[in-house]
Length: 347
Image (tube, rainbow, N blue to C red):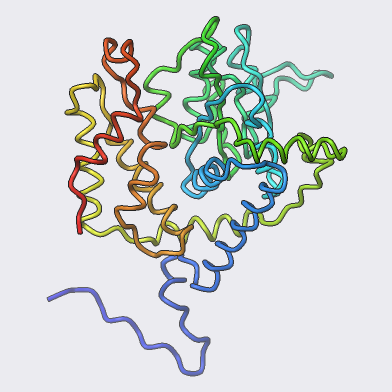
């Protein structure tokens, strides 16, 4: 017999008892729907500036929902930087950009203690990491020591300087970019840091129709590359994002779908082409990404389709292929395509 006392009946003369969803800290159905509509407006607002790239936009929104970080990979000139600044303006969030270079020091990112003028002693001057959206531009151009300065910020959401930990603003998202073609003078990100990114999103060239629209906008004098002149307006904010995150946490994942997800991750460790497979952290990130993807689609539960939809962006950067196969042109996406086709899907 349980020793837990029965819940007291609500006082008929007092205020009504709150709904069970509010007791658990979950938003009501109406609040969740409003939050989803707000994020749809965010995606639409970004689309007024960014032509195409709908998948990348959805990936960035998904990362915000589950407090993940994103690695954007694409050649110069495909609007990677513009994506981040436009996202920040549409959500009324602060954003900062750091150009990662070989001479960049950790303190240039995290901040440092300086001697104040007028005999006021020492004070901490915050670095650009103290923002909501940090764009780490060309992150692989800076040495590992400076790359590692972001590890604590990405994992613990704080910065430790001179023995004191300082929390970062909430929300906090790191979006790092890198050029997949030019490798001279770069420092590849170590596996430990790659594993901290929720997604690796590939930013492709636009289609011919999309590029025609880009050129047409510039021909009429519209500078789509400048969010200020493009008149991007905040269409949502922190309250909607908070409600959306709570709604995503409430999305359910059945036992069979969890089993499918784990089988898929474990298959990466057993694949002959793979030298290093996906870690348990990668499995949990795949779970959270699938929940957010399902919620954005209007579902309160995850199906195998959501797991498949987010599998490649969540897992591609966590695989280390055998060197001889890389020389033959194999890539992580090809390996994942094979695993997605071979791992049994629950009915």
